[in-house]
Length: 155
Image (tube, helix red, strand yellow):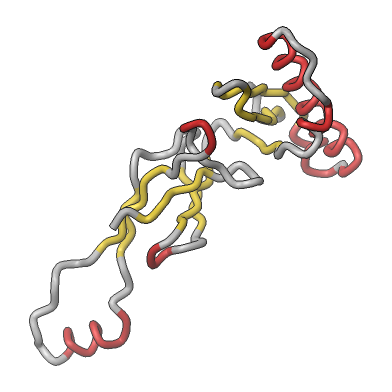
């Protein structure tokens, strides 16, 4: 895939299996032309439906696919969103198309922690919050409507 091309991803669980399609789209068109962007999203949903019909051998209603999210799969980065814990709702960009196994983030000790450090009191080791992939429907990793990987607070 060249720098002027992106892949759109649309996915759903069909009969307990993850079904998805990747549809190539011109980057400039995706970023600047709203009607063409909506058309490309519709094409991705239609392609997923046709793929699912072929795989299952039965007709599946178009209405089951018309509101599925479609997002861009970038070849060099992905988004991660924290769910729960001290970083709930925080989003980060990961410099890899593949999401990490876990994310460790420092926990802000607040003003009390800073004052204790200034007064010379021994401070605890740097606290961290660990986030791991959140499982969604069918046991697959959960993603937001715009494609960010969702990570739950583990401790």
